[in-house]
Image (cartoon, rainbow over the protein chains, first blue to last red):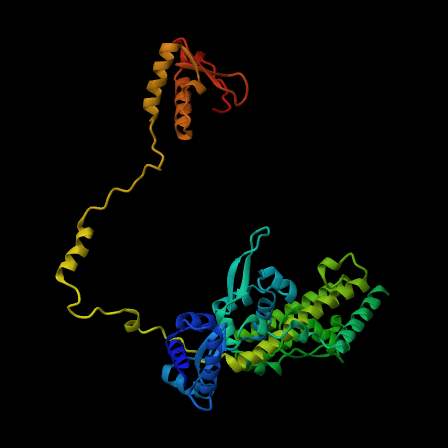
Length: 191
Length: 272
């Protein structure tokens, strides 16, 4: 391992949060490109085949994480529990916040067609959404967005890594079918 | 889903037999909200929503609950939400109004088109939520390094004997000195008291017999207020008469002849 890779290894070892490449370059007083190159060699080195911990790029930076197949042992040792799973309603609310942020409670309710107070509060308690200011509209409603914890728990480097929303559109045939049924309903009501 | 067990166990129980041949399987495990229910009902059923007998569903559910003796609060509250949503939709349909409140003035075709757009948009997020769920399953259990920097690395201990004893004295001396008094010159200093101001105005009134508010008031807001209060005091004690030629105009103060207080008519004063 070359000397820059070893120095980066030390910084990553000691940091409790993901470190962006730019910050690593500053700390080492090295050109950004060299740091990126050294990080790539570190990633090759710290892979699950060779070590019990792995170098991940997540939440805008680089950080070590326990290899997934070793996590159970670590949990037994530390007593740390896997976070409780999210209900479909929470996932759906989270999707609205993650894709449209910043949003207000009423934005979320408008899209989901159901009041989402509880879901937002619950996501906030879990640290998956954060209050990120207030809208400049009457009543100054709270604006919600997602934070670093969201990116970490979903293994995302940044929000731009979310698949485009268009990928999740209903199939055209399903849209046609819904349309046909709604229209026939409308027809019946007119009659 | 933390309550997956309970909800799955309930799935079979929530099968509702309404007026035959209507059979509606209310899958509590996948229910997310009215839009979700609406899509499910529209896509799945070949019946109209208003043919579903909600009372029958509830009766069956309560019976099953009584039989099993096992009360799952999460699953039961989901059931209540679901039935409430169903009731709301059904009552709207029965009233022959459009499903959406704000669509009342639209013709049915347009209403259907609007509703379709909302459903399509909603389902994008529902599906995105599903995809997030897959990512969650894969990543949420990962244990990232989150240990704080060891304190030993944050503090740099000085080598033994590196500092002379005199350095301690030098360091301590400034701490023993009284700090200079903070400069409060920027804070407003209330230079007048009501009693002093009354005295001053009485003197002027005695000497001049007549003056105006503008003559005697200072520029400071607070002091002006005190002067104004003093004027009111002079007026109420019958020592002075106050007069204004127009609203917000200057106040003219004249000495009142020492007469009975009752004769001094109150004069409205708009402002100083």
